[in-house]
Length: 311
Image (spheres, rainbow, N blue to C red):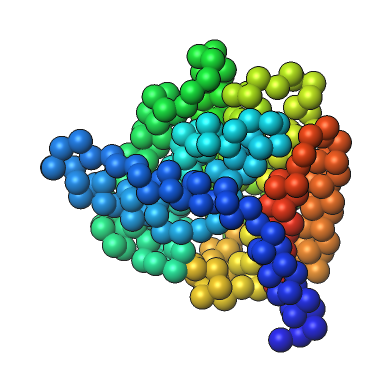
């Protein structure tokens, strides 16, 4: 291990120690209690949905939601249905991303992917089911003023649909997955795709709670700037990890982007420059948090954790 790698590993350990594990425990306990099958004939689908949902991970998006609640003076436990809905949507996206027609990956979080475990047909339905159950959970479980709940759900759906995650995935498979066309694309197109595919759901993890909490629009500006910066940081670090991390460390196949010939921050700018861009995004996110007039320690810890994941 080089001195640089050793320093990065030590930084990752330090950030991990500061990660708000109490919030992750709240999320995991809530997800553990969810069941989706109402009749015996769909219990197999319930099993497939929960297989991917309970596969572990840091739960960054729902923890981000609960940390935002704490920052604005709301009880994190009151936001658990919304946070869980976000995680259900994220899990559905992972199942579909791994499918043979998409990234064709066999490993996720150190376990066989859903289509490997249950078959492609059941995996598709498991993803569909998680998305539908996320909406149901948000509508039936999330407390608050009805107009705020509706507006918050609208923000989440906007981040998920054609103007967000699904649209970004479409751009990825139609433009960035073709090595010849990807070479003709630049930083602006890459950032736009990443903003849709990854950034919008991360930003919504913050924005949904701001809406539910009834924070005046002007006071949300630092949080929304922070969330946008965090989404960019997450994607840059993810691109770095695809090159520097091992499959054991990542819990999924490494080098997937290179095998598919995708344009990433590393392939476009090189590893050193990608690390510089990650550092810039980290600083921007932390600077935005500093402008918020509330206690943002948990949000800062999440930001540091995401940044120091790279090796």
